[in-house]
Image 1: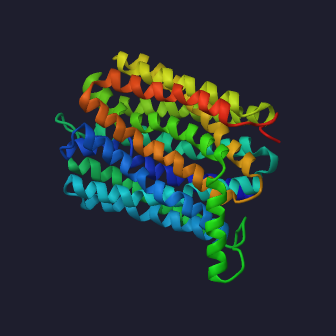
Image 2: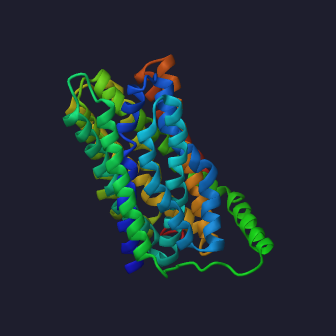
Image 3: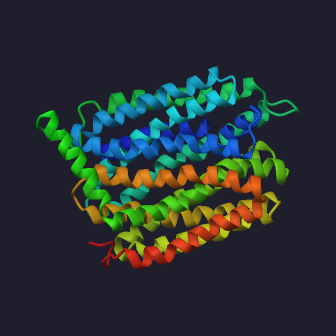
Length: 401
């Protein structure tokens, strides 16, 4: 449990740092720099594009060189990148820095999940859910905290450059704390030792692990369910703050609270749903979660009231908890003890394809149509994925054990 508690503490600080620089601060900062809907969506999604390229190699690399070294590489990025936002003068530099900042979660995320899978045994669903819930608390605090700082330091004309810089400084301090805690707590700790052998042998194992995981259609389909669910998560990250402030007439703090409330429900629900999926199976929970997310997401453009939007965000958070509590655990069940790092990397890569595509697709749709039709189309995509998953992935009773 000591290794697990350490991962949760480090993950909390890292996610707090990342959330402070992301939502609702990032889309509003892009808006401040003069970005339109398509550009805002691209700015929010570009950091997740990084994960598409680096999560699978990072997870597989941890199978070869060890988890500790790879985790610390990610924590270094968490600590350094927030301070680079202080030099941004125009939108193009924001895109470059966001892409590089995405290396933090691309490296740290799948490796941390692989460590939990290493130590969890038959309690993968429960422990992965607890880990995710505890670390998401950082995101929970980061979103409303960033909105609070912007709202209460802003003038009547909205946030100025100095207010944005203050939020980025706080983000950097949290990232430095995560790195320092990781350096102290992970010294000498290793859950998966580096594999012996010459460079060519290690490279062969690295490539074979990736190929074996990606050739399993059950891994790909299950990962796609969370990836598609994260299509809507990414869209909400980019456009819920803009919709709340510019269309519904809410303030920046309320926009942050909407996102925070959704995360609260996810945090509270995931461990319970993870335990249930360990005992009774993953698939029904994933299917129900996709349906809840689709319905709540499509309903958002119909609402203007803060309280109705809050209720809808709560339902979306519940659906997200259902999907995320079981999808990673199902992937781990499929792979059993083999190539956990590569499996979590593949899962994270597909996750990030959805997460990155969400704000970009939403921006393109909103520019062409409006919020209602754009959100309706994306919600329908989630519903269409359900029969593919039901028919394409088989599991045994008790999550496949």
